[in-house]
Each structure stands twice: as C-alpha cells, then as structure tokens.
Image (cartoon, rainbow, N blue to C red):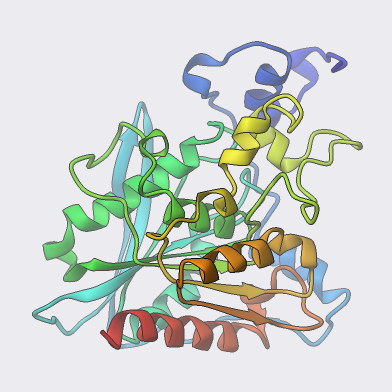
Length: 333
C-alpha cells in the first residue's frame, strides 16, 4: 500500500509515475513538468572522479570532414517538439552512408542528447550519418513513449534519406545506460506493432540492422537486475513505468530486449563497465543469439565506472569498438 502525499509537496518530475501509482490516470499518460537536469556529463564526472582521479571528460576536436546540422524537429506530439542533431560526411556518396542513432542515458528521466555528440561526430568522420535525438523522459510521459519516439526518429531517417545521403538498408542504434536499454529494445522489436507508436513518419520502417548496447540492461525482471528496488522510495524504472514490477509485471517484462530475441534480431555489440548489474540478462541473451546464429560481440572494461563512455581513458576504445563493429556489419557486405 502506498502512503499518499499531497501533490503540492511532490517534486514535479515525479507526478506522471505518482499519479499512476495511486490510481489516477494522467491525460494521455503525459504531464508537463520541469525537466530533471540532475544527470549531466559534469555531474557524472564529479561523481566518478572520486574513485577514478585520473579521468577527464572526453572533448575530442570536431572533425573538419563532417557537416553539422542541429535542432531539427523530427516529430511533434501535441505541443512537444522532439529534436535531433545530424552529423554527416561532407563528401556525398552515390549509395549513401550507413546511419547511426545515438540514444543518451539518465535513468529514463534525465540526460540530454548533447551527451554523445562527441562520439557521434567521431563516428560520422568514419563514413556514417549520425544522429543524436531527444525522446520523452518520465518527467513528461511514461513507458513506452520513449520507445515510440526513438522508433519515430529511425523512421525520420528513412523519410529524409535523400536529404542526408544515407543508406536506408544500413541503420544502427547505439545507446548508453537507459539509452542502451532503449537501443536494445528498439532494435529487437521491429516485429512488434504495439511498440511502434502512431505518430511521425508511420509509412516508413523503424527496423535497424545493428545494435550497440553500452551498459544498458537487457531485462528488468531478472536475478541480475537492480532495477525496481523501491525499498528506499520509487526507483527510476518505477517512475518510468508508472507502477512497480509487482503491480505491472507485464510492462517490465515487455521492456526487456531479452524477451524479444528472434531469428530476425540484428547483430549486437555489448560494451560494458565493471558494474555487473548494468548488463542484467546479457549472458542469457547471448545464449539466445547463439541459438539463432546471430553475430554478437562483448567488450568489458575492468575497473571502470558505469559512466565510462563519457570519459578518458575509455572514450577512445569505446569509439574504436563501435566503428570496428559497424564496419564489420555494414561495410564488409
């Protein structure tokens, strides 16, 4: 039984999940609230530096061979404009370039698409059209809104392929933390119409041909998962789903990519920290991938924080793993 608090005393970002937890259905499961800005590159750096004093924020020089276009609206839902940034090689290519959608993390309620701009720019310089995109967080819309948004971003890529010189048969999704969970879910559910959403470029496919999951959980209801521990208050995942895992287990189950592996699942790479709970379900998923003879790679950085891809010395090897994997999947064909 949940103890009730006056709504006026609750933080605004908690309202969507709180209303569902106490049995009140928000209109369209969406409540406009101030964004939660607690997770930033700087805040992550300050936290990680306590245990890893030699680290530095990755700020590589912007490659001169790429073109940048920012603040492009890819979908409008109500009065919410979802935007993305595009990085592409300046040189045009007749057959187009493979594309990569980068998905930020932040516990499904914080974070910003700018977090992965550095790696998106570097990957673009290697012959890819890369995109960093907004998606609705739990401060304004509950699961599966974020999934719908990101599938809409992939459809936008296909709808605008000629403009941005991309190959629609070669699209990957890359995500970190909550973004890794979303990337793996988006990438494994092209066969599931219930997760498509009804907005934005629906005449195009949201399928992807490769997945890079950087420390994102593969299963919420799993012995290895740390998500959904509400002993000290509702967890980040409980906020996102709007209900605990005991109240809405079907939602928690549906959101795990582990539960969607089929013979059509694309190649996937897992890049992980030393924090085991962040890749809950990975080994079970690998067994399923092997059963279907689906190509996969796993790379783990020992003695690393969860936020490793944002910092040196892990940024460059994360970039290298990403490019080598994408080249193997897309450019060896």
